[in-house]
Length: 370
Image 1 (cartoon, rainbow, N blue to C red):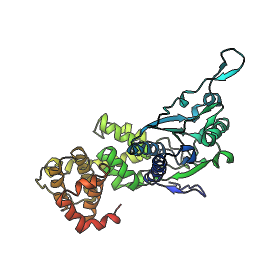
Image 2: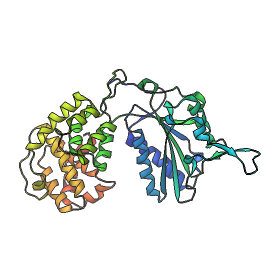
Image 3: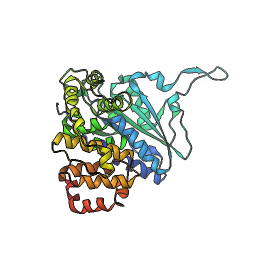
């Protein structure tokens, strides 16, 4: 994959920018600041890297402030300037033109609500539409319509180098934004994937072949290629349509490309020889695989089972006892994934003596294992 970077812009993983921006907005909420005092944010990155997902994660994180979070997702590529300003009509005595408020400005202005206006694909919008975004990003107005003080403004788009539909952002607009480039990171994606219930076969394969998480290359004209977004769609097919990779192989290939799909299908054959996950969690201590591919598959399967039984500490304890027989690197992979099951799940794990014992003897590996 071609490694294309923006110049003079910080590069962050999805979880890094979610942490940074959630903290910035949480502080503004805590201090009662109007969001017009906080810079509007522009997220740059290749297609499918996770920009939109990051906005949804920020919204979820901000719910911890006790506020209701309402996200308005506007695809600027589909808008023209009149859509943003509203439709003109006559006033009551038919002496002046007034502009009907667009739907995107119909927001809950109550104190217990925080609105997020997400201007997606802003770099793909024609410059006439980008110009209308000037007022939204800085003045928080378009024509006579004004955003409420409880509204956060965020935007996202592809880079010029991504060969997507992209128009160069005018300097006057770019100077009104806080810019962050989003980079692909398996470690960052993995924590979200475990918590979100990404299919264990997808998670296991990408743990084994993490370079396949992001296969976008602007120099190649492939229509189907691997990205965090396309792998999430593969996961949705396996979780909701058919768990049999062979049965839906053409659909998978249509999402991530034939080459990657062939490797994924071949790799998943390892699952037929794995020990029973039910036996592991019931404390029966079945055989331990020895192959690297099988161990990655087993870790992802155990994580999925643990997520589904996260409140059954007896079963979780049995699985940790079994994991202690794994090579240290793989027990580290597994127990780190357990900590991703939900926010602060480590606190629940700390109630288990076997986990505390593992942490004291092998926990140092967490700092060096991806």
